[in-house]
Image 1 (spheres, helix red, strand yellow):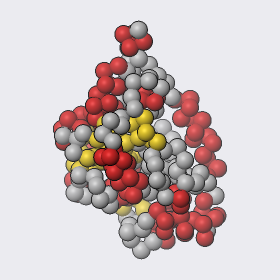
Image 2 (cartoon, helix red, strand yellow; image 1 turned 30 degrees about the horizontal axis):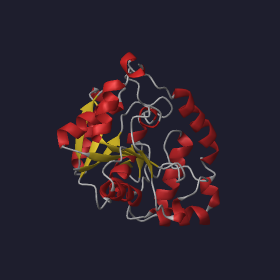
Image 3 (cartoon, helix red, strand yellow; image 1 turned 90 degrees about the horizontal axis):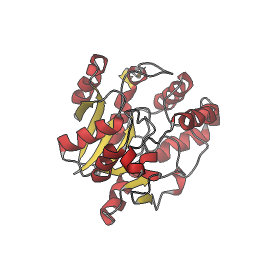
Image 4 (cartoon, one colour; image 1 turned 180 degrees about the vertical axis):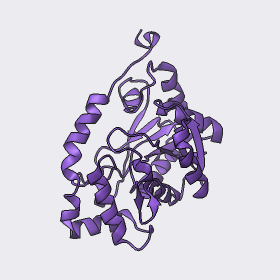
Length: 254
């Protein structure tokens, strides 16, 4: 089973309840769901959230939008993903952060295709694409191994458990369309300026049938829109570096 796991919770240190902030009368998380549902190869879309009461509404939103949901750990998103894979029989999945309103279904399907061609792949990444367009592809068997060896429940910056342990086959996404190979645009929701950016773009389009090519074409024709939030990129990346940690159980370290 090929899955798309949307990771989201209402709590946020920088922009609280950002998943509920409305654009055109819809909470931002619904735009992530719309993108995930455009995938042609994903067989199940699961919203992965916490067991906290304040996240009840996220489960209602998932049901209303015709997707599944799974509830689990507040801080450990790897355990949430693991639980979702067990519940829905998922063998391989791509992740979509609740912050990434323009996550690209074309990139998701590219990851599904390349995993399908080489089932020995454990972890798929792409470092050269537009920020917020693609996160990761992960084999459930590899995820289960990481859950066994990690020694922390704080797994927000989880990629190091796959890329830095030497235990897994890492694959850099291939055959990426040229239009998405750029680093001058920021498409993730972490600050008020990010929200302003997304609102500007979404307000331009009549509906959510837009493609990444169309979004980028609009931004290239309106460079001032790119400037609304791109200045935050360096700060955001440094925050990620500061929070990245690799904590393994003693037996893993030998």
